[in-house]
Image (tube, rainbow, N blue to C red; front, side, top):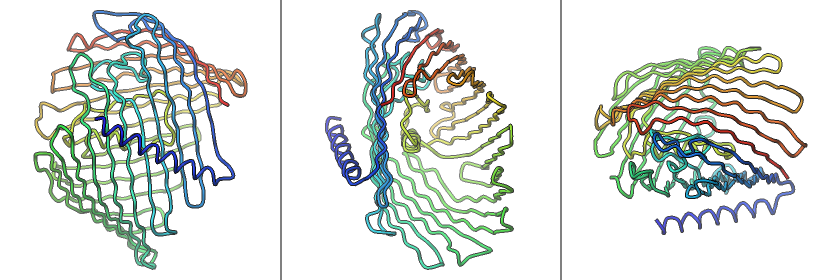
Length: 471
């Protein structure tokens, strides 16, 4: 662990130097430092069932954002560090780091490229244990998670016939901290090598289009056995009109995590874009695990916006962390994204989500639902189902004041430990622009959790007041 942390620090240092060189040659640099200070109170700061402890706390969060887009280099660095100081429970005092750093560079024009990235985030040790999305209450169920990687790739255009991308990617995921009450040993450090090749049709193909993809992943873990995946995919498409395409996809996939799962598969579907405000993509077919479907629908009207999605995918914990962190446009301030429990095994995720928003004058109402079933390959007893709904109302109260009210409910069924949890949360927040560079936030929330395992049950009421100053 010491060696890996040393490697990570060296990588971050090298990335920082590269960013600094890029900025030094720039005429215009986006540089945005900020400071958030606040205080709050919780009547159950550890989210405990039998031993509820109340505590006030003080939060201090300095942050900085850099951004630069040049002709050959695009770079971004968002970093914040949060110090939490509890008045009654000083053993909970903590420092939490969050980082998103990314450099995209063009080494040889239109040919050789290099991407660098590094992240630091807070992850739940156990998704079934008590926790809050801000990392303040129930913070003992968090572990600081580091990722970094580099990816050189070669792009080639074969006149008007085709274009190709050959990419190599290396990344590591490193965890720190330990679990609460010894119920989970935390994450398993890992490193991955990935090679991929993409070839797609060029403008010489007008009525038809095609694509071929090959990918090979090799992941080694410190504790669990290594995993390996290999996939081939070919797509043949037909342009029926400017707004409607038909597609046929076939391929082979192999997932090896101690068990071999895989086989050939196929899908047929269409993509319909009747207007810039409407999109519909539908696919159906068969993969090694059974029938598979995909749905992606978006409609943006004058008052209503609809989004409906369904997808079947094979994933694991580390890929979720890598994808979630690297897809951020900027590092969020104190947001904990729940994932499934740490596992090196692949599992099938069948996820549906839908939301609709209504905007009228100064008010926006959003309603969303989701359902995800996770099928683990080693035993049906480890299946999980996560279902939830949420409702929010944003209101522009005045020229400088906004109000947000949010209600959510989700139900997590974990067959591995025979535990079903019903989680409910209500929050009300008010933000006001105090000066052009200073904003205040007041938040009141109520959380409660009912569970089959009694020590996972809790109720919490909290209030917080924060002020953010930008420089």
